[in-house]
Length: 369
Image 1 (cartoon, rainbow, N blue to C red):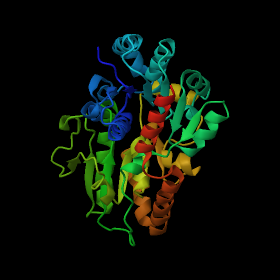
Image 2 (cartoon, rainbow, N blue to C red):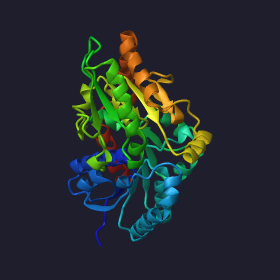
Image 3 (spheres, rainbow, N blue to C red):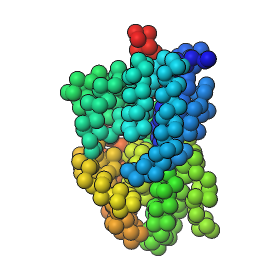
């Protein structure tokens, strides 16, 4: 029976990316380290044993997990047996609170030391989860500076390590004038349900925007786990892009963007954008009753003010999105002010080398366990 140094668990596309880089960093530090993983295609490439693809499922929100509960429970119970058999020396959970909390409980009962990397956004809705996590983990590695105080004030061992996107997103290039023939990014989300809701609206928004700026071009940024058939751009001449180095993204002058990790990626590249999000109405009403923060875009949350416009639910209409993005071009002063404020957020998120720092810390923790 093979024993693994770490079992690393993620359940969404961004967690899959960060998890894969953590596995690579652990193996760079210790080539003989054995890693098992739950995640998505990125982690599958790096792990010694891949146990399940949760990130590819795209399970999000409040209702979808209920519909997929048999699938999630089946995976959870397999991991319970994996931990009970002593096949992992330590568990590392990445975000994805609902599923990972169950794994933490299993690890706690099996006396397997557990760690959290990339805190679930407990500060946005249910802060009591801080205590739940703190009871079950040895330490949590957070990626936003304000999270460190939140956990430490509750007596949880915590370390701010910086945001892992700093390891892979290049510094934005200088821009001295607003482009009159802009390149616009269309980022409808990383899950199939998000793409189906957002993409038609974003494409129509771009058509309206292009009437004002006939030289405008667009790229649709696609998730790795979704096929081209999920992105119905037809014969519009819009390129479908899948990339891992952000080189094409860095060329964007503006964007229509679904709320999520992509908004922070755009912010770190200094891309003025319009952020939008639609969900099922039952999910929306439940979310509205729980969410405690005033913004949905991480750039606005970090800044504590609205740098980029946000449109939610029935506000997400092509005319409104096109108008909001056009406003940046109508006022170059606002365009460059937003760009500068977005780029300034990089300084708040620490320094590059995040994956290596977390890997070293986990190696040290493993020695002391």
